[in-house]
Image (cartoon, rainbow, N blue to C red; front, side, top):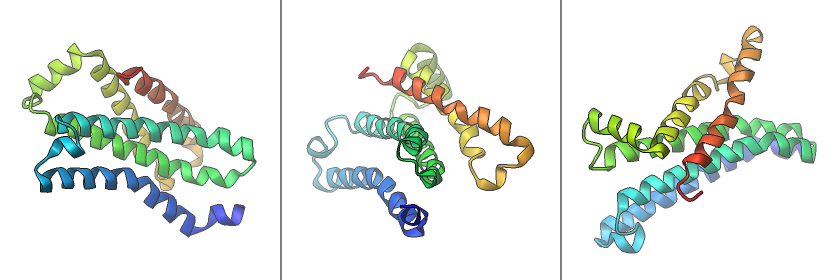
Length: 176
């Protein structure tokens, strides 16, 4: 099992698997544009669909990332932790897509003042922005070269903030 988890092909397969939601979204958007019938592929409100889709995948990837450590303990396979960084960066990637869809596709977000008003007015957007803000230092400190022995403890505390991100994401989810 360790040999399988250490394989570069396994990492490539996980990487490609993490891109599947983006591929599905791009395919749905392409079909909606090419057929001229968005309601069949991305609902009557494509902006809302794309925003919710990317937000849901952000939450899922944050949860996948947080499940790595318990899974490692459960199956006694330390090599599973080598996928945590990749999954965390995909959570950040889908979070950036979610934020970009909200800012650039939503016609109400045409000025900084309108964006700021939406952040202050709506609790779920406020919590989402805080979660997005908390993910930035995690993504910046994610590369292996950033971990030095003297900063390891500080980075460990920083990466524990991922639990706060998960809580914020669940609070932010309008389905809860």
